Length: 217
View 1 (tube, rainbow, N blue to C red):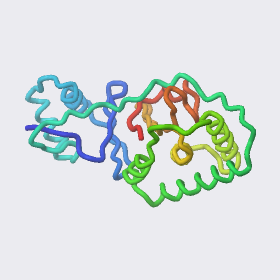
View 2 (cartoon, one colour):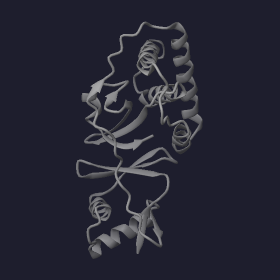
View 3 (spheres, helix red, strand yellow):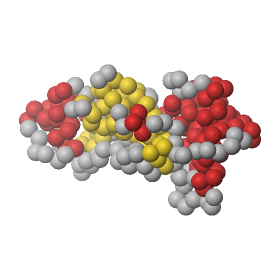
C-alpha cells in the first residue's frame, strides 16, 4: 500500500521522536515510539517490515497518512541554521511604531479567528523574490519599532503573534523574511521566530537552536 502525508500536516523528527503539526486544528501530535520507528523508516525509504506496514496502516486510520496510488515521501522542513542577529541601531520612529502596533493587533485578531492553515496560506501569498533598495535601513527601523511594541503590549507567550506581524510587515515593505516554527520534546515546547537567511530578527540564535523546525512559511 502506498502512502502520502495528509494535506495540512507538517512534521519533524526531534530527539528520536516525531512531532506532527496539524495546520487545520493548530495542534501538535507526538507519535508513539512504534509509530515513530515505522514513520522514520518510511520517510527515509527503508524497506518496511511487517510491523512497519501495520503501524503505517494505523497512521492512515488516524488521518495522518493518506492512501494514494503512487507513494509520495515527505521531506523534513529545511531552513538555514541561524547564526546571528540583526545589528539594529536605528532611531525609534513614531510612525513605524504605530504601524508595528497595528500589525500586532491585526494578527492577534486573525489568530483568534483563523485556523493556522489559513494563516500560512495568507503569508505565502506575500513571499518576496526580489527586494527593494535600502533594505537594511528599512529593516533596522522596523525591528526597532517592533522591539518598542514589546514594552507596550508585552512579549511573553506571544511569539506567534509577534512573528506573524513582523514577517508580514517585512514582506509588505519588500523585505525577504520567513517565519519559523520549532519544537522540542523533553519537555515539549513550541516556539517561533523570524529569520532572514541565517539572521534571526526577533530572537537570539542560541535560543532558537534549541528547537527543531517543523514549519517554515
